[in-house]
Each structure stands twice: as C-alpha cells, then as structure tokens.
Image (cartoon, rainbow, N blue to C red; front, side, top):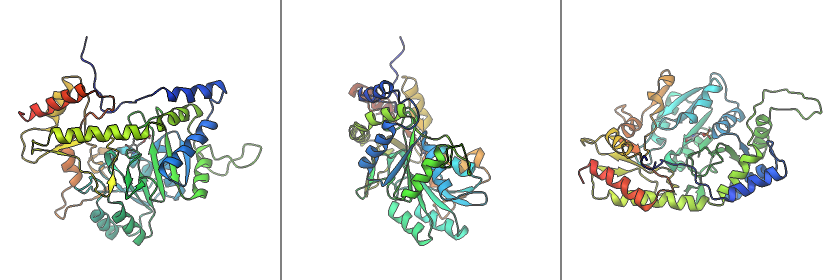
Length: 377
Ligand SMILES: *Cc1c(COP(=O)(O)O)cnc(C)c1O
C-alpha cells in the first residue's frame, strides 16, 4: 500500500450538500435555473453583503460577463494583475482586448498601486482594472480604488480565491463595480465547478443573466438580437453550493488555523517567510504559502520534491502572466524603479504549502517536519 495522499486543497463535503441535491432530484429540477439557484444567489448575497448576483457555470464565465457588461472589445486596454492564475486575464483576450499586466507589490503580493499609477501614464484610457486577491489576501484596495476613481475607470474584483475574506470589514468582491467568485473544486467552498457575478448594479446583473442564458429576446418565438452564452449554473450544482455555504466560516477558520500553525512552526527558521497578510483585512488563507530568503541554498523545487516523495501535494506560486509564452506580446508594468518584477521574485522563491482543511494534526506535523528538514532543522 502506498502512503496516504495529502492534498493541497481538496473538496470537503459535509452531507448537507446531498440533501439539497436530493431535493433537486426529488422535484426533478435538474435543469439550469430552479429553486436552488435562486436560493444560492440569495444566500451568497446575505453572506457577502453584495447587492445582486447571478450564479454561473464558472468564475471564468463571471469575469467574461463582467467585461462584456463594460463593453470591452477589440482595441481596448484592461489593466490586470500579473501574479495570478491565467483565468483572471484569459477573458480579456476572448473579447479581443489587450491585457496590460500590472506587477505585484511585496506587502500583500497583489496589484501594486505604484505600478498601476505608472500604467496610467502610459495608457491613460484603459476600459477596466481587474485585480485578483492572491491566495485569499485582499489587495491594497483603497489605494487601487482611489486611482481607478481618479481616472474614472471601473474596478473589477477577482475574488475567486478570496471568498470570505474581508477588507476594512467588508467582503472582498463587494467593493468594486463587479465582483466574481469561483466554486471550482479546490476553492474554499466548491460546487465541483461554478462561479458567481455580483454587483450593486441591478440592471447589469439582469443583463448578465440574459447573456448567460443565450440572450433570448422577450418573445415567444426564439429571437436573438445579441450573441449569448450558456453560462448558467445548474440547479444540481447550486444545491452543492447551498450545502457548502453553511460551512463557509468553518472552512475559513480551519484555513486560518493552518496558516498560523505553519507560521509558528517555521518561526525559528529566518530563511522562511509566510505569505504576507494585509493588516487592513481578514484573509481566508485559502492557500498558505512561503518564500525562501534570497541567498538561501534551499530551493522551492527541493521542498516540493521532498513533499512529493511522501505523497504530499504542494504547488509553485502562480507563474506571472508576463512570463507566459501565450502573453509574450503583452505589456507589463513593473513595481520596482529598476524595472525588476516583484511577482517574478515571489515566483522564484515561493511555493504553496498543503492547505487542505481535512489535514489531521499528524499530517501537519509530517509536512512541517519535511520542510524543516530541508533547512537542517
Ligand atoms: C480559480 C480562479 C479563477 C477561475 O475560476 P473558475 O471557476 O475555475 O473558472 C479565476 N481567477 C482566479 C484568481 C482563480 O484562482
């Protein structure tokens, strides 16, 4: 028998999910739309404090629709986080617009307000600013939003990783013009796959629903004046979401405890730093990450290999978008005056530690022991 697998972040189900799914089966509401979808939207609004919501098939679909609702198209520029998962920026390209990647800053690993200011000097009229909250940590949102307001540019929050995180007491995803959430398999709560678009703009959210359901005009016959999408969440998956949402705070508390345990366990190793948290926020700690000090002989690969040898999953930091072959033609605005990239540095020195909330105390001890051993501790 092989060793038990320890995961980075896998789904945690509680049984309640199945009750909502069973209800969908019992009432034959297997279609998209249905009572679970509407209820899940309402329950997400109650939880986050957002104004209006449309449940969708993926977080990526939510980002895509946010861009559509802002009429972003060919020739437009969108400022977007550089240090993130590619799903943040792919929809910009779906619409034929040009992403301009904004570097991270070292304090929260999110979009640098300084780099954002510099980007406005070069491109005075972007159509939107799209910022992801990496690993659940809120960005310097007030600074970023002040810059957006000064330039009259809408702010979109990619809160796919940060559901449940707050900034100055308010939920991430509810602060900008649009917010997006993801319920993909490894996120803090999951519907197996799914997403949500939220906004205080009721008209926009209605339009999102229209576009997400094939853009059918209000006529009995099938009439279309616009191109639509099949992006709606199904009533079955929404049932999973309703069950998961009941445990959201529990998941968050577990994730935060994992982060604190790593932080304490590595406190005596000066070469290790945990991913920084924003003092103005309360992060969900979706993934706990660490960086290795410059000049250390230990590399992230070494640690990932050592964990892998014990059947423990870990992951590199997201590779910055400006380093991706597919975005080689896109512009990038660095944080540092000397033109070096903060995101590239974090990528080179960092890794994501196993952050599965089902990890037992023994699992955590095993992981910690393996990492410590890499530093001869
Ligand atoms: C997961 C993720 C997405 C995409 O969400 P899906 O539901 O998988 O489409 C977008 N942005 C970030 C930062 C993510 O981590």
